[in-house]
Length: 320
Image (cartoon, rainbow, N blue to C red; front, side):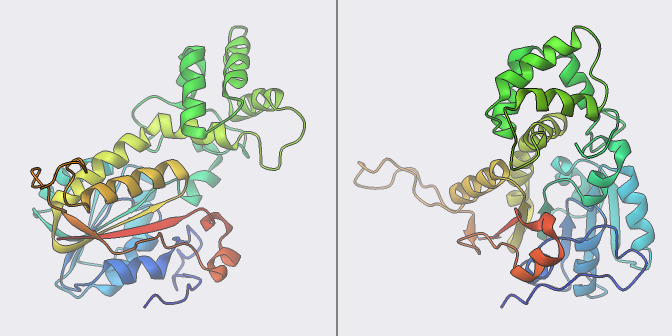
């Protein structure tokens, strides 16, 4: 039975870094074998990782992954007392390589907390947030790949419009992309503030939500290839789980959740023959079973403590 959400204050000096969403719900549905091997694909501030470690015995092992140097250095200090913890700098799309490097081929559980940590959002230098003036960046791994600056200053108008519409579900995508291209023809769009000014020009009247929210989401997804990475990671995770092992995925917007829901449905489905066939000829067997028929969402208590958890959804499956 799922426990009530608690404040998740970590009883140490690291309690104010990032409150992990759906904390109790995640741990109770994921960690079934205290002697098992678990993977936290998105280390972040280490909140979920510390929770998993607390549920493990001395025989249990946790492997954590992150591509953010700052997050890894922070978590190393926070979790330095745990001898059964291993951390790797990598994109979680490479989790099969990380697990192999850690000395394992199959694991008992995998957690993916998809999204940007509060610390990244609140760091003005990272350029993730429309609330702070900073150079456009938005890279999870700020030492590789293209940044949001390159996208808004080099992609053609049609490509920018497509990104904003598909990844941000932005209804003013065409108008925003047109103004972006007009503006950069005179001078580069260098900061988050520059981009917010452009977006506001494209919006008629006042908006209930900040007009830049959807555009910034879309650019972040494109910069970090988040949806492609998510699909690849889920495919690999199913293969890497032991029978009875669990995969837990926390999403924060509809695009992510739609991918997870669809993939979990496909992996948990048996026969996929056309309905008109009298007998099954595909021999397709389900590889997982759904633990959560509907996603677990934050409790009222959690929402009161952490407003950023409001869009989060947890889906859990088990390998069969």
